[in-house]
Length: 344
Image (cartoon, rainbow, N blue to C red; front, side, top):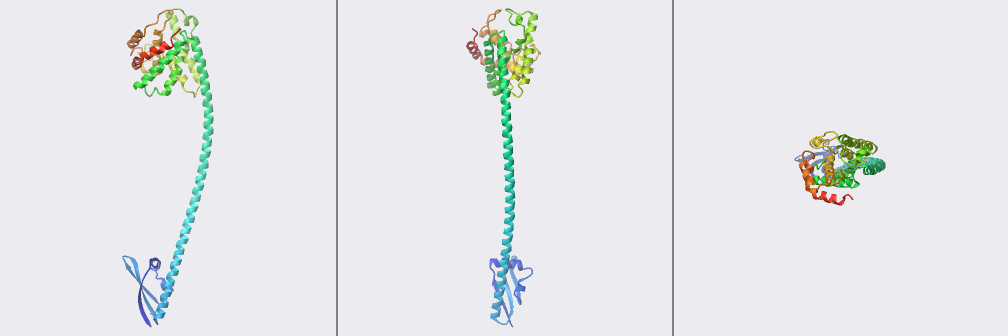
């Protein structure tokens, strides 16, 4: 009986195989009469020793070949197990991908459905808004025509004050005053609403509205009601144009408040300072400028210089001081507007 001791270096793959066999030394079950001891360095298996109980070197070689075959079989089995695990993992990953793809398809279908619903809603809203704006435009056209027909002033008074208002608003914005209130959209609304400032005169009797001379105290009290009448007329129109551009709302402020004064001495409500809406404060100056500049049967028109002096003197009393400042910077523009749309 020969007792042979042999040391064999292991390949990287054999390290892996023997690591899995190490605890039970199950390789003994494959290669009987084979005593195994492992040599490790820092916990890693580096080599293996065999103590072979054999009769001859040929038998030793045979048993060693058996061991190598066993290691190869175990390694192959191990590799197959790893491949099977990887296949399972890939199968699970593919299922998860398929589920995710299905979720994305469902989500995209839902998005498409929602987009279609929004498109239908927007089309419906657009159509509804278009009808509202058309209704509003018709109301404005009718009210403007009515205002011109019943105004005791000339039609050019309406054109002039409309441009005065826009000029002051633009200057105020450029000066940095009331920047939030005077957006580009609001200035457009002011321009459209200004012609309705005296719409309430439709409720004033002809005997007072067209009297060829100054009004007495009683007649003047009746004339002053045109501000309240105008507010009421436009409030009714606003109910018919809800959802529109907002021009009627601005027109209500102008018609109802443009005879209020900064110091609270105006009418109809005796409002003071910023209690008066900004559109009305702007219209107040525009209306007074044009009234003083214009000739009437009971008075001659003032000069531009005299009107300018009067307006400056009323800063903080009749007029918002900032509005007066804007006027002073645009006074030459006011004169140009008055000349362009002068009365015949």
